[in-house]
Amino acid sequence: MTSPLIAKLDRRDRLDASERSALDDLPGSPRRVHAGVELVREHERPSASLLVLDGFCARVSLLQSGGRQITQIGVAGDFLDLHGFLMKQMDHSVVALTGVVVAEIPHDRLRRLTEDYPHLLRLFWLDTLIDAATHRQWILGLGRRTARARLAHLICELQLRLETAGRGQGDSVALPLNQATLGDVLGLSNVHVSRVLKEMREMDLARWSDGVVTVLDRPGLWREAEFDPDYLRLERAPV
Amino acid sequence: MTSPLIAKLDRRDRLDASERSALDDLPGSPRRVHAGVELVREHERPSASLLVLDGFCARVSLLQSGGRQITQIGVAGDFLDLHGFLMKQMDHSVVALTGVVVAEIPHDRLRRLTEDYPHLLRLFWLDTLIDAATHRQWILGLGRRTARARLAHLICELQLRLETAGRGQGDSVALPLNQATLGDVLGLSNVHVSRVLKEMREMDLARWSDGVVTVLDRPGLWREAEFDPDYLRLERAPV
DNA sequence: CGTAACATTGACCCCTCTCAAGTGCCGTGG
DNA sequence: CCACGGCACTTGAGAGGGGTCAATGTTACG
Image 1 (tube, chains in turn orange, yellow, green, cyan):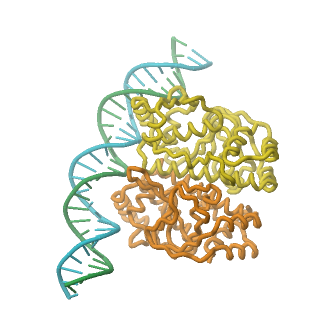
Image 2 (tube, protein in one colour):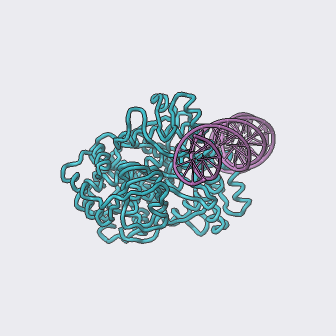
Image 3 (tube, rainbow over the protein chains, first blue to last red):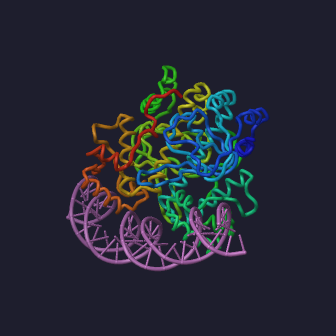
């Protein structure tokens, strides 16, 4: 059941049998949640972390003015509040962008697991470091990339991550996010998202409709985004 | 010599005597570096991490177009490439924004230290989690805050962090960054930074000249920025 | 005293926003 | 079967925040 997590970690550094079974034993009963539900609220002090098993979640921050910014998208195999394990207090909310299946993993389970398996601890730490590297890519995009390059980069990132989670089929991948949500990711208005998406269709780079993204010209898209997948650390290296 | 690091960690969770002395024994000889020097280059695989002892460093990412984005500012007590310890390959460069003093800490020393002191390992992990939380604040700012609120937020953040590092004196703090650099932090042009700085002077919120920031109206500044210091985790809580 | 680096200011432009109207799709109910 | 409302997407028009370019100060320093 934790297989997307195991697959992701194993792609970074080989897991042995005992580590795999320890991870397999982790989750309590998986929970099915509808789109739009707030799974964790800002300022909360959760005693468990949520592992996404299926669907799409997001870390969300709000401004008094009504501004809404998504700071990360979580897919199968991702912890979105693993940092709650050490941070105690949440600095943002986590919402379900689509229907999702999540597993709640109590912090004391994580505590014991990381004490018994230092290698897994390092892999969890690495996972949060990759979150930070992803944040930096988004900062670079929001600060210095054009709206088009920003969108292109997002598509590159999500396609690769979903492929890793075993969710891709060729050049198409299901990404059932609406354009307003996409705007909250890219720091754009829903209107402008629509226009940029149109541009990308007309440039024959990618098509995003009915919740499915199709990459039409991968080299072109990567060039447009200046995409370099190293930050996702998908090659094996000992940790 | 590692005292700003010890001070920062101790503010989050009390360090015992053995942990303090272990940290004290860490660094090799401190190195003095001039402004503008690139301390670590993107794609490098450093075998040591840099601890800032004095001055200002930054994580920098570049675009082919010449766009330059700073993704984090490091002050005394900060590791800026601690993630190299597990990530192996750097996803960005680190440059000295001013003259700085840094200590190089070999990864095998860090490895042994974290194996001998699991509590320090968790504190290091926490430190990188706080980096990520800071990244999220910047993402929120770049995506949804106005230039003015973004600058106000940066001032709030840096003032608080420098105070923690023992670098503040009342409402003034030395921040010897020029406006072009500031633009690379805020995703703005140097020209617009100048304009926004002028606004903030005229609003009697803060003054930033000759490398010194003076906060004139802290409540007003915090309100303008919607600043909430929780994400820096400066209150003690067991880890 | 000449030069370089940084800050300021004005003029003009463009990317993206907001507001608004219009289209298409789908589920529900008569 | 069709009417209806709701939702998401598209498109246009006008406005604005911030960019670029360029001229002018200002200060530090060799």
